Length: 127
Image (cartoon, rainbow, N blue to C red; front, side, top):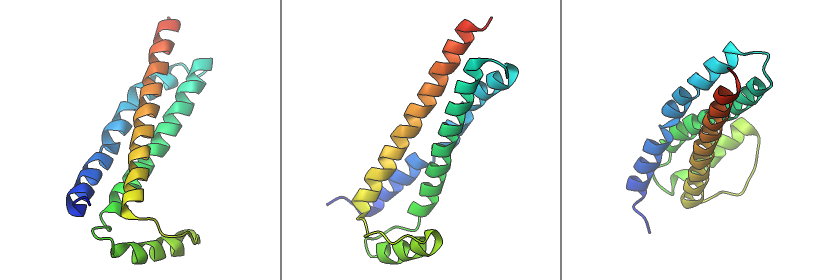
């Protein structure tokens, strides 16, 4: 079994990187705003919005994971989330939640990479 406190701290540190991902979206946004009528600008906007959605999710998870320090916290946490979102799902373990946050972190990483790849393609095509 993993040390819950240490793993929780590590997860929160990585989830806090949403700030850096959000900052990395600014140069592609500037280019998209500079060339608003270009077809590739639409791609940059779409990837920008996708990346910012993932940044919002990382931000949210970072704050929500502060509430989960012990397995015993899961029932009351799920109850609070169910009141807000009106969803009744079977409870997930802390390990499953960490796996979900890890997938979200990697999706954000890939979305940011795709945004920058599109930016580089854009810069090579547009004079």
